[in-house]
Image 1 (tube, helix red, strand yellow):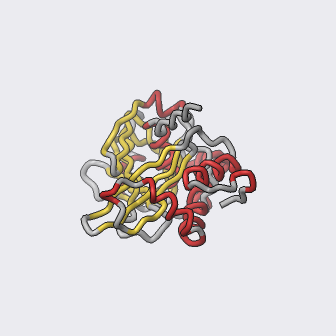
Image 2: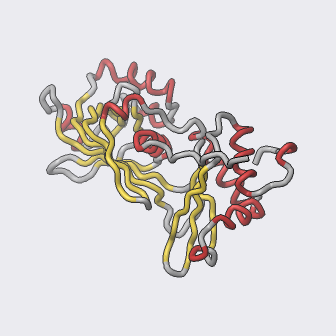
Length: 255
């Protein structure tokens, strides 16, 4: 019987969406002022990003005094691995566009809309110590160990984060802490040049799993594609154990 064709990696637009959803650190860069820390960020399906900045920040003042078209800006988001790795940054995303002020009377309503998809506690500060801004995105770039890629705004609008995005951190932490045997089995797929480092699970999505190898010559990431995309928790667990060569696939427990 022929072997199934391994899945392809996620699209660039999906990688951007997933990295944005994972990112816990973000800063807003605008010409002529220092980068401003962002306490809340959310990319909406319409293709813009809603962000919260300190009400007393220069960025809030500049956006509030800008013309209707807004002020040029770049939102930089950092996706950190949930594990304590030697190099914790997994990906960087730059969203470039025009930042616009949100009218004071619409701040709380917009915060409520964002909370339906992203219940970030920082939204509770809106109207008090935080101000919402909208970044109308013109372009997006994601960079990781494989290089940097750009994506059009049209592709970004129709893309969604990976369906297991919200569960990924817990999965990786659990696998690293409690399933060293599974990680060791997965590491057998690494090429010989990467066989002598410390191996951690770095990322997982419906198409595959990425390992981080911390070696004497630096850090290396290696992706292991699944034979078919996973569409639920059980199929994701099965895909990982299949890669690991588990002989008891009919009696799987969730990793």
